[in-house]
Image (cartoon, rainbow, N blue to C red; front, side, top):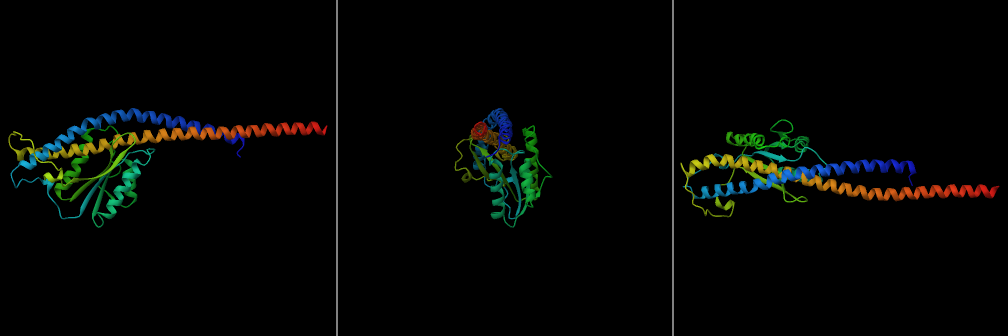
Length: 288
């Protein structure tokens, strides 16, 4: 059994760690409220835009085509992997990184693959496994997160697709479901699909549009793509804070349980030391 000095030092260390995990939990709670409000407000808007695009594309005359919906026969892939900049959030990063790596190795084997790592963990993980980073280093969008900064990365992927640098763009991210659960998502970003079968809904709304449906769609599709990309980043941002809050809460609880065990061991060690002293005194008295 460790001596009293070692037990006291360990208890002090665990208490300090517990204070840190409790503080990190409170910080994540505050950040989660803001991130959750942002994604909850954006989801209906993004969904409505997609429904509008579906209705319009289903009702335009035959022959309409968008450069963003052009099917490609080539095998040049841009993979956008969205993680956090920091750790200490459970399996939040490892889950989506495993999903991305597995799909790239299996489904896209033999493709010319480039990667955009949104978040330091994604950039480090993918570069260590030999993937080429389309944007140098870590693409940090979470520091001062806003639509304009995210749009720059979305425009990079969209312009690369239009120029033929990429034949397909795939996004990997964590979708925020609730504080404790995030769904790992692999989503085809480009080329988009304009067919009704993609959503399972028929065009039910008759819009009066000026100057025309084709012109509206050509203008609307790039904006919708940027909104969808922004939604994926917001989903990941909310999921990160939720995962970190849960992880720090569990760490705080585990520290409390460990403190109880160490306190019990220290009491036993102290009682053993007192018993030995009493025995020594009694033995000395008997000797006299």
